[in-house]
Length: 385
Image 1: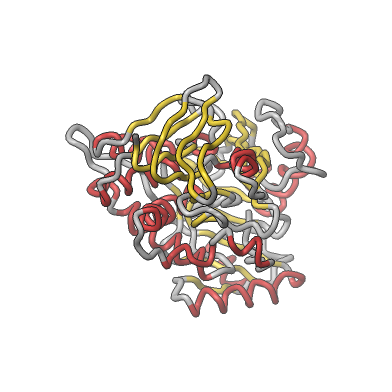
Image 2 (image 1 turned 90 degrees about the horizontal axis):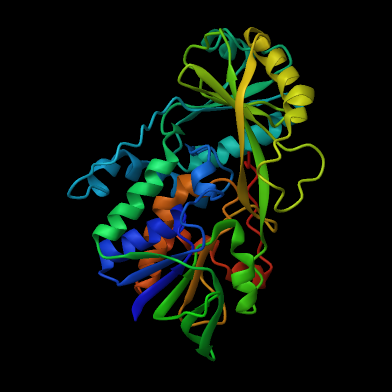
């Protein structure tokens, strides 16, 4: 019998398992239906980290996680491995036309109140700092001066798994299809192959596939799998000091070595669970390329080298994570629905959820409690890319 069973072994489950085993001495079993992680958001994430959010809870989670990422080689070291995450911090740059200026200023005020190192730049200041950027239609830019960038997300996922295993956690293959228990207390999970695994506490950390597990407990987790396409571009253009740039259109781009990664909102409706192999190349040809060429004229000469797609685990209610105790149960918890910022916040959320499951305070995630769904308290995050 395990102290804790976590259903879902992506980065959120692996992080929670790591902290439970490392910090609290828990006997943890992580049940993962796809040990290859071929379609896991953890494997397909853009793996960026920022503090330019509209909700203080997200600022706090990403700030805590950034500190952890900077220390990860020590925090997640094992006897034979010191993980290298390739963290770089060139910043995020949000651009706004006159139509979006008021919103950008309002969000900036929230960020300043939370101590985020961010600056508002006028079009002349933007042009001076980034001479490759076309600013004629812009009213304002918001640039993260420190504490924002990107890293190797799959490496973080592997490091959490290895550290968890080194501390005694077990990762087993299996598809959980139900739970057993009496009243408000669960006692076991049931797997599709007939196995019944017992534990004292349970966590749903299955990302975009968390909703059926909540349904099995009679609780609606409004989380769906929403596909996002990422295009890998080759270009002879040099973009010195390029941050991750979010255009007013909603499209974004950032450097990756000598390449450019770019993407944006899907065209039209975004049906839940759209196949990941069905890359929307028309999105690039019809919409993204014209935006890139207009915003950065030097990018008019480029070509698509490759593309991939991954799922956002989208919380359809307010685009914010659901993390904490599952209402109606004494020993059931969840962390899901992070709507595109789960990878970057996984260290803070995993650490906090482990504390909560161990019976300790977890103030970092109090605002994300699933109870807010029952209370009708929406916590809307405006800065979802």
